[in-house]
Length: 109
Length: 111
Image (cartoon, rainbow over all chains, first blue to last red; front, side, top):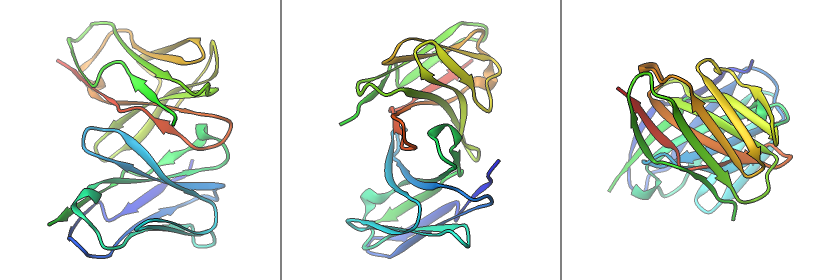
């Protein structure tokens, strides 16, 4: 079973700062997901990637397959980015996703 | 847009009660999942279903059962609720690719 480690567990930033959240996993995968969970519980899928880099607005996700590592970057952070960010890795089907324990991000105005 | 709904956002039940959590998706997805989420542990898969009346145990099925009589609806049943089942329960659905759509979650408290 894949082990997924996220760092940091908690992150507090000032509005406008560049933020990086890291995810490492132990076993080869077919896809890695970044998810966002706002207070109240609902989870939204941000990215699914298997190589390289993806960008959506101020969010950028990168993955290095050889190093078994992914990063989620947020540029020009805003208080509305405050949420838990979860990394999940999979080996083919949604059944086989393993989730990290999440990074709690707080962006202060 | 895919919509996954759960029957309750908050639920308080007593030890020993039978509890039903319902999940409905509107995109004709084959796969549906029940997870629980606890601080520091991440999401853990309880059960999943890949078709009507088909189910498989996840990583932590003990104390739970499921029912999928219709494609759009997947129910999680706590036969006899216990305090260690106090948690956030999240339902999700997917088509034949590893991308999940989550419901809003049900925060269950068992007293």
